[in-house]
Image (cartoon, rainbow, N blue to C red; front, side, top):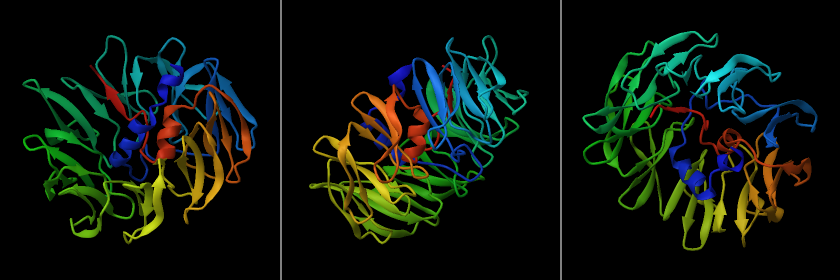
Length: 363
């Protein structure tokens, strides 16, 4: 497993446009700990560098409602509690995290199923290629219809609530989901009843954020729209990705940020950037090395890292050479660089793109 869990930066950053989440679901992990791996073991570390537990896992999620998905050395998946003890044994070939009280799993010889936190099977699937965790009572799923892969949504009884008819979909947030029409490939938005409330008209579209806005692309420009589809801002940049109320933007000079009014907040000048999220510092790449800037664009932690990720509760995962550690907002190591890799789910959450274990691929 080891370092292949860490996606190349370009691939991860592109995923920002797909950011999605909702209250009380898998996009909202619990914090108060750090996760790192070395020698095929998982180390759960307190914020003051105190060991909480070490277990022979090769992959793990963060905790969602006090449950984490883990992969044992034999490749099987199970679920643990906050002490690192198995709550459900590692008997599954594949597994997602729990979201809204349910997780998708596959046992050898069985159909893909949704289980509750006791391990009871609540839904069994047929003729499904992949399925995602529940968001706002809906799970996106993909079926093979006459050799065409189409997406729809299921409810918690396993009933199809929105017909599989889309080329692609994103999860529900704020009562809306971005959906891509099969014929023309343009994106629009549907409500929880499956009604099209914003027409298919965008080549690209993000999920709505907690403030009720989404970033879309139209006619070679990026737009910020509200839930009614009204254009709030026009962003004159080659590329743009959501970052809370701000947006990461790129022009000929490089990457920077614009604020919620579309005004330049941090002058585009960096080779690459990663989001602020809720923090006051963001990672930026300068001449091949990563450092951090504040919201005025001032470099506060000098360029020195091979990799650097956004701060979560005042801690950030950074890579020095080939090993990982964690720093505070002054750039001081609170966990010395000594670990082989950081789990993908931690990095996904730091980047604000939800959980890395949200989809069960059945094929």
